[in-house]
Image 1: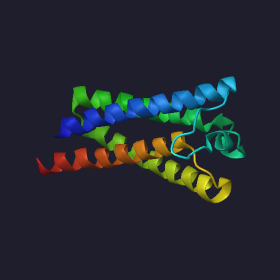
Image 2: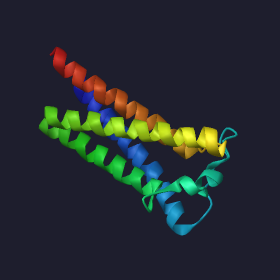
Image 3: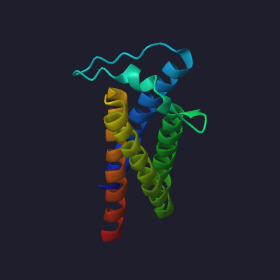
Image 4: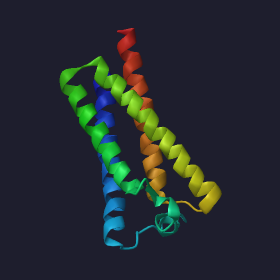
Length: 142
């Protein structure tokens, strides 16, 4: 069961990485985002806002680094079965969910629009966090 949780984290990390890479590619090329899904058409508004960079680095680039790190750590955990790796997954997933909450609040309260890619990333971060907590709790019971 624990292995299934880690495999799911790897899959979600890959999905998050794909999402972030698409946003980073948009950022570097300047092409408009395709975002007319379920009336969530604020992607280009969010992408053009002043909140897309933190310390001079694109939020999408942070997403690429975050999901790539999660992917590598989860893949290593599949091979090594190390409690430290599970703790790192938990810690990094907390950072990811807190960042997702912060940026979602910016979308809601400051920009008053939603980006489907940002919401997808927030959902993926939440799922990774839940799974990271779940795999450690399973380990404690065994």
